[in-house]
Length: 290
View (tube, rainbow, N blue to C red):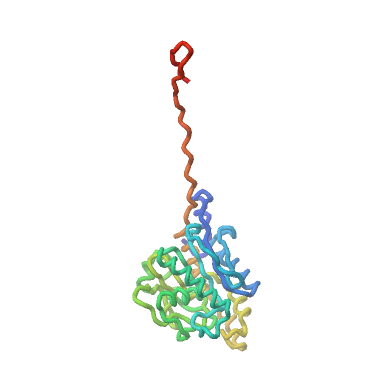
């Protein structure tokens, strides 16, 4: 795989004869323009067509049942919600979303089902698995240098990435402590847990592999006044992100699709009728074959 490679899904369609199971994207952004741009980014950088990336916006409607057997994998996108916020400060919708995601993760973890959580996802999965999520390692909107750990260098999802690469971040909270069963795959100078894995197939990143320079700049502007940065910092943030190449981080999404795309199970064929030879008695008593 090379930087900017978007041929993965085409190869998957060819491999499965056009019958690849879709992926499910779960988002929680209530800003229509931001939500639409986010969905478009995931389609572009996974190489998936819209019909191959089913989209559920659970900030405005309940998640509902998720039949994992229908999907190749699940992606939980970033969010303005924060896991570490006191329960009393959370809206009814945020509390509902947390509850629904907790139920979903119960099954995902037990089945070790392919799952990729982004930013908000790392706190959601981390809290579900007993990690400490707090504001110790929050980062303002910026590009940061991410480094793979020893486990990350050999991890099936990340091992094709460079040992070090730039990626976009911007988060109020992060993982500050992990239990032993969580494998830390990447970190940075300001945030020691930039990616982790639970089991063999449940992944999460603190950085945003779905953002390029243009979409990140739009996201930063959209969240002005939300506590991520001071108003007078906007110009310096935009200048900084315009000068970096984050294409290596995009490989996380392409690799997730490449690794977990699965074929639809073909219906069980109906057995062809087998001709049966029957002896039919005649009026003379001599049987005829029919």
